[in-house]
Image (cartoon, rainbow, N blue to C red):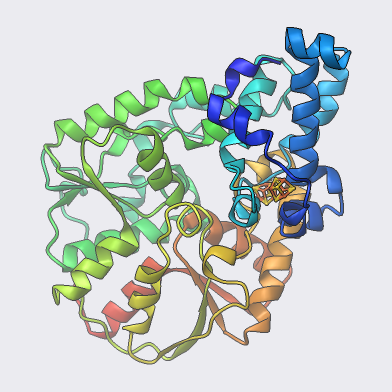
Amino acid sequence: MSIRDYSIKELIQAQACTGCSLCSDVCPAASAGRDGRLSGVYRLDELQRINRSRAGLLRRIFRHRAPGLEELKTFSDTVYRCTLCGRCQEVCPAGISLKDIWVSLRQDLVHSEAYPKKVDRIRENLQESYNVFAEDNEERADWVEDMPDAPEHGYIKDRAEIVYFTGCVSAYFPMAQNIPIALAEILESAGVDFTLLGGEEWCCGFPLLGAGLRDRAREYIDHNLEAVRRKGASRVVFACPSCYQMWREHYPRDFSICHVTEFLKELLAEGRLPLGEVAMTVTYHDPCDLGRAARVFEPPREIIRSIPGVKLVELSANRENCSCCGGGGNLEMLDADLAGEIAGRKVDEVLKTGAETVVTACQQCVRTMNTYVRRNKIPLKVLDIVQLVRMAGKGRGHSG
Ligand code: SF4
Ligand code: SF4
């Protein structure tokens, strides 16, 4: 392991931990896995111990031996069983940027060859096909073929004002493909000049961070920036909070970027999004990468409240305290049982609100919750906010 994988800020902040365990109390992985070794406080303590043993001077002072590969692998099994939900960071009274440290730690473990081998699949899939599912990247916009009234250009134009960056989950996962379809219909109805990138869209690079392969993201960043540039677009819209987060934090700010909830709010304010009645009681699940990470809490709620007939009831833990659905941090690939257990706890919280539908603003959250609900035959609808808006638009008889 090498301390070079951490920023100076991360190394200094890690020293500020008081051991209060508040991060452990809110950690969905530690509680669903019933394992304190999955908590932030354990992970940080272990990292500090390892760092003391690896740095020359500190090693002499503390007389620690460097950890062996097997010891690192045991530690790695706990490090990767984390959804990167950021709840620990939200409550940490010492203000430690825990999420950044967790990402650096994963990279450290990859450089130390002490990472779960399933991580190689993410790297290989991206290397070979530029998407996480190892599908043909030229088929990225094939979902358009399922639209009854798609224009001849299939929403892939030479130039447009706005690029809708779909992300891998929406593009390829059948359970999520209704989301880009609904969004394309909404944008068309509202007269928005938009284009998809089609096969020219590569994975945004976000899964590489969770895999511990942050240093491989540059190629994807450069490619996507150039693809957007070629369209002459001034703005990029994301329905996937993780793509949005990746662009916000790791791409140069060459374009204006926003999440679709912010964009739809603008369309609403301009009167370009008339909404008809939908009689439904819903609750709203804040996706971790949109809520806690991007602080986009109100636009989705404003959109939901503006739909006639929709009653919004809040989850007991909402906004920055919203609990994770289990879908982040590549956890599903690394420990599907733990991801399912976290999803189950989330669905239980949702059911307690009495809502018939849980609305979110992330295709991965939709996928995770829907998988659990279907598998366990729970009578709960799971919708992306884009699908809800489309339903309300259809209530107005839009052509879209
Ligand atoms: S990011 Fe979430 S899952 Fe990971 S340690 Fe923090 S609270 Fe637990
Ligand atoms: S909440 Fe912060 S200070 Fe408290 S144990 Fe966790 S990392 Fe340390």
